[in-house]
Length: 265
Length: 358
Image (cartoon, rainbow over all chains, first blue to last red; front, side):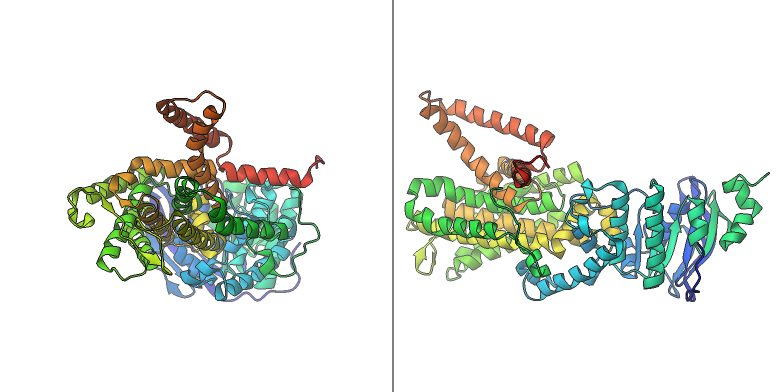
């Protein structure tokens, strides 16, 4: 399923240098460096507990690295909160679904537009005039996301009632509604059946191609990773053991030893 | 329902997002408002207005306020009574300091004062959650009541500590004080409640409400999509306390015509909490249902046995009331945490298909 048309891969969007992260005595990450280029699909793989999710949490400001530097859009970042990362155009989805269960699909995706809505409290009280036209303008944007993900039928259904695969899709929708420059996906296909995985792959590729969104994803399904990603970084016990295009990574003996584990014969 | 939305197609997002998208609902609302504004004052007795409808309206405002904080934003609060007391005493101080100020502005300013106090006591909500926050708001409750009882400045140095609401008029009709008729009070209250309910609905269906619900449902995910937790929680505290403050001012000026701190003790806070649990957490309609239920229940318990020919003693009724509340709270918490409003919604969904099973 390799892609035919070459996509424009730009300069470095995000650069991680010597990042370490410790929780008490446990070192989740030690001295990890890699970069993400604009417009690419970058996969982070590794065995359980390798520090993949910790890496994403550092990138979107949920954890502060104890050492090292993260440079985003050419600027080194200081300590920051997740909502500041969101302001800078970083969106993400979670390994365990983190939807707002009491709200409908539509409202969940509308929350993704939160940062783009700025009518003041007074107009919100009236829900009329500028506040209403703003609401409608963003509803249109959300409806485009809903069309894109083909979830028109569940627009008004509370997300708690949806099956797992659709919840994952709604969560992707909420991240897309923010029109991010960098989209972090934490195991977007975990627990899905083959058909749902294929749908999700198609959405990820379409997001990348149509909107030019840079994507960093964690995934355990090797077939998927090798198919859709441009470059792969492999972590083990918090260290980087390989980095490169899928073919090179697949052939790397260290990776085979650590993770794939099958290639010895 | 006996009616349904078939044939009513939405062709714009504006109509799809309306509060009442179905025509029959809009007609029902218009009839309800007509009955409330015209029918009730024409036909209801003074007794019915002053002991049932006015307290129901006042409680509805307080329940709306607590529902915004607890039902929509997920921050449990036991300080409702304290914030109501803030509104009542602020209204009294403002009304006596500026005798010429229109009573509408007095109430709005009193709500604003309560909102400021609410923000101060909401500050711990960034760090503590759930039960611990409830205890922090409990501290607010006790501190505020203590303050209003102990500092004579709040009651303008009245020796008894109980003060009566000064008479004020709107459009030439007295709405507070002894000269005010129960009809004028009722209409004034109703207008306030209708507007506040509309504003609450507008807030919760827009950006602000979605931010509140996001914080309630999953605060980590909310922060990651760019919602600032402290800002959002404090806004909920401010709006909630504004509503509670206005409710307190209405209580003191319109319902009881006297301002006293003991009317807003911890029992009041629990009473409002019961209203939103029974009525429905996270529902505007539920706030009204809960308030109606809790105002009506003692009256029904009183009238029911008498009508059946076995009048009960007052103390038995008081105990029955507590027992009924207790069992209902347990029932709703276990069976239907979203209260009467949710039961209403389920009923509508079932009737939509009735009599067909699917």
